[in-house]
Length: 228
Image 1: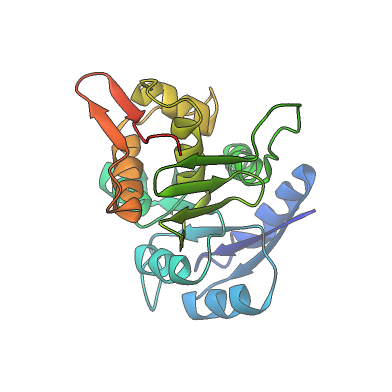
Image 2 (image 1 turned 60 degrees about the vertical axis):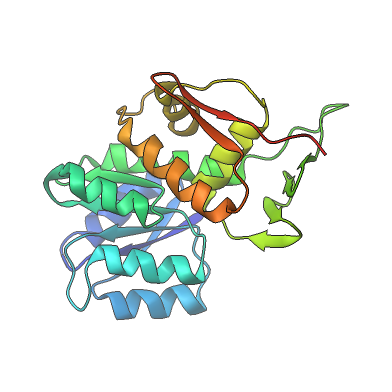
């Protein structure tokens, strides 16, 4: 059973949501204040976190930023009124997905299943399938989900790692924004192409000074790293 931590100051939300999510093999724990949620994340094992944007002590964006300094746990943010700016900021800070309030519990369950499936997706063990992708200055370990840039570890979120392996798995191939979103989130995703630009920008910054992700105007993105 996957353990999920909900950080939301609505004290009436956790109990019915926990009951519903049990149907999908999720055990939901909750915290009504960010400080309590951070304390639990630091001492307990959770598979994902759900953060509300509107919180006391600090907002969900600051909370997401704080968590990302310590962990790459998958994060789903509950954005107020589904505003585009909330989604943009959340994704820029390292959230893996977003869901506008009010939401249907079934959709939240689907989003959780998607981010966890991405995290747990094991590399295929078929004969001839590489376990590492090697490029000049860059090494991607598919089995351990680790990335090194010039021999130094690069900390990526689950979504950033999936984006990198998608592009690097087929160098020079141009992936459209819609194709990237569908590959990362599933074909039932509510397409939001600005999210891809945010993810690519964030990944590029972490890979600096390497310049291996190219933008093709009006087409999409391609990986241009040279094979080692």
